Every structure is written in structure tokens, then in C-alpha cells.
Image 1 (cartoon, helix red, strand yellow):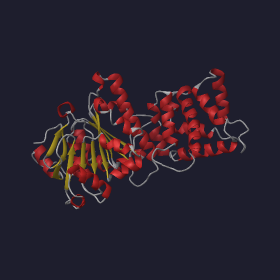
Image 2 (cartoon, rainbow, N blue to C red; image 1 turned 90 degrees about the horizontal axis):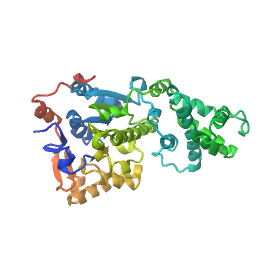
Image 3 (tube, one colour; image 1 turned 180 degrees about the vertical axis):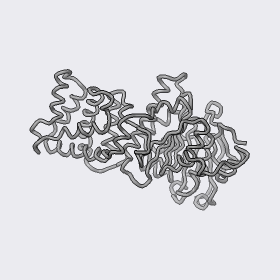
Image 4 (cartoon, rainbow, N blue to C red; image 1 turned 135 degrees about the horizontal axis):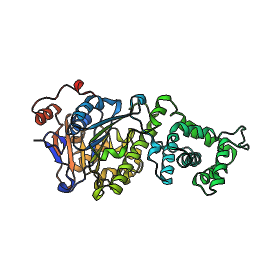
Length: 416
């Protein structure tokens, strides 16, 4: 019989989420090719468990449509952060979660020096653009009221750095702003960062400004600016009461990747900081699970390899879906092995990637051919300290019967 606090991995394979009892972390890495059953056989039944809070990466918004209503009936606060249709989303303002100069430096890096990019271009241009952006964000945070701290005003200040001539000799509107800051505090962080930017040659300034405006210009649509102008999300609430936050991201359009990555990075950091500073035993009152589909391509977290090793004690865990181990290597380099090593549960649903199949064959001590030809609808489960288990994928209809005694209403009736 499935218990409310069980982790569901396969047919007949249910495991306790009590870390103190199992002495394992609750991080799960699910590897399987497209169509192997990652969503239907693992993500969906664990959502229906309604155990703790969830932050769910939701390509196309299907999980929100199908199960948002059900979770609301279970007493959850259900929210949708929609990067595909911002006009249908709760509001999220990344500046709301900036608390220090280090936070400013980090968000400037994420906006300009996209961690996913792996570009071969000269990093100097990006680094200079980050310096400019650090100054502008610092000005917003230190010298304006809360209502002005948003993406629209950030872009206005960036454009204020444009001079009247092409050689950057004439003063800009932002130069005048910085003159006012200098008269008030000659050692201000925002001024020091701007001076570092302004001392570059004219050609560098032109390229830097072009880089910054190009990166930020894609966030100027009316709907997106509206979504980013204030904050109705309150990330720390996710750890205070049962909440299901569905983060709708596109699996085809990459233009919002930077904002998506900033959100997941801030969400993880905010929850960890709240647990450390405000919670008894440094653990969240309500456990939070990040369920992240297409983890290595759609929803990266800055410094995640470092964070995954320490989130267990805060009551945070992750369920990561990828198609092959090579995706982690492409996204995180050698730190991909760190992510795998910090997931005490590994589920393999099959695929044609030979490198991943070799790793699985070594784990279960079977020939490579047997792994590559494993029957569709079956999986291998590896739990640290336990023998591998070969099982059938979980049957969602069976779950509904076991858990409720009868089938749940059709999915169309579960829509909010």
C-alpha cells in the first residue's frame, strides 16, 4: 500500500521520504529518452502524493492544467509562473530578491554572462557589460524607491548611458546621475563599478553598451514588463505552507532561458537562506521538492553542483529529469559528475545513448547490449547502499485505484 509520504519510482517500488529513517537524501536523477515515461510514471504520481511543497518545471503548462485543481483541493496554494504567456502569470520581480552587493554581482552575471551559453567569443566584452549592469542595478537598489526597481527602469538607465557622439567623449545622462552620487558618497559601490566601465576605450564602451542592450532588449515586451514590475510570488512562502508552483517554460523557444535560470537560482538561494536564518534546526517547516523536467537544457541553477550537496539539511530536495548523462556534462562540465554523485536515487528508463547505457551496465553488472535492448516500459532503480532493482514503470491508473479506491476524475476535470 502506498503511504502519503512515499517516493514512487516504479511498480511496487515505493520508498520513504524520511531522510533520518533512510539515511539517504531525497535527490532523484531520472534518465530516459523522450517518451520513456519520465512524466507519466514518475513526475505525475509523485505530484498526486501531495507531500510537501513543489516547484515544478512545466513545459507547455500541461501539469498545471491537469493537476493544479487537484492540488488545490488537497489544500495547496497553487500558483503559475508563466514565461510563455506572461499575461497569465503571477508576478515575479527578480530585484525583490536582491539583498546584498554580492547578489547584485550575481544577477548581473546571469543577465549578461549566460551560464548556458558556452560561447567562444572574447569574454572581455561580457565582463565589461556586467560591470556596467552591476552599477545600474546597484543604483536602482540603493537610490530609488521599491516601485522603481524593475526591468523597465533598468533598461531606461542602460539607455541613459548612450552618449550624443560616437566617441563617448560627451557626458551621458547616466554620467550626470553618477555625479550626484559622487557628491553624496564618493566611495559608493555603484559609482566605483561605473568608473571601472567608463575607463575603457570608446570602441569597448560602444561594444559593451551594445551587448547590454541586446541582452536586455528581449525583455521589453509589455506583457513581460508587467509580469516583472512587482512581486506576488513570495518565494519563502513555499517553505512555510503547502504550495505548488508551476513554472511554465517553453521547450522550443530559448529566449526566456536567462530569466528562467535567474528564477530557479534565486528560488533555491532564498529557501536556503530562509531555512538558515529563520527556521528551527535550519530546516524548512514544509519540505520543498524541485521537480525539473529537461533539467540540463531548460532550467539550470547557478552553482547548483555546490548547492545540491547541502540542501538536504534544509528540507529541500530535487527530482531531475534528463535524457542522457552527456547533457549534464555539456551544461555543467565536470561538475555533472558531482550532481550524479549527490543523487542517492538514480532511475534509468532506457534510451539509445551508448555512454549512459555503459554507465548503467556497470552499475548493475550486466552486458551493455542488455541495457541498450531493455524492454520498453521497464526501468532500473539504483539506491545508494542497496542492490539495483529492475522493475516495470509505474501504472498511473493503478495508483489511482490503490490510493483512492477508485479512479480519479478525468484530467479535464482537474483543471483550475
